[in-house]
Length: 246
Image (tube, rainbow, N blue to C red):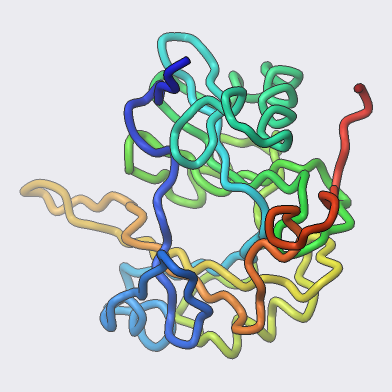
């Protein structure tokens, strides 16, 4: 059976890396201007920098299209068509929590997040459910942080907010993260994501609107991608969470 992307594109793109971050085979670096804004100095008072813990699971999402709810993997395909058990279980979990997703999503939107059911390179002792939401998207347009929090209304867990305000160096952000982060990592926490938002001028009246300008991230240099995945470890899958039903 042919796999089809309901939205016609990927659910979530790649986030560029800051200097010194561990680069994977297909990763790329943020440009010098972005890195300076995020970690050294804002352009002006219209920039605001957010830093959140980066979680190590499977990037997934849930979209609403034509009134139908679609659990998605990162590439944009339905999670139920994935060859991986963790994605089948994500699809099941979404429909078991359908009312919560419908309370957040509007037509054409996607709620992206991390699915922490299976250990990839980090094991977790979860004190919350396995889905952590980090972006509300329409196409490639992200909702600003405060709008995201308001829309979620406490319905879903968010990555821990380490910092908000001025630019912050990698060193300071990682100190705030600590060795194990705030989501129950049993190994070292993977890293952090910088989110730079900006008040941009709109129209002749120069009224301002908040937008997400760009994201960048830092991943610790000794992190081993997929160390607990059977295809890499040669061992059985490691589960951070398992459903109560067969």
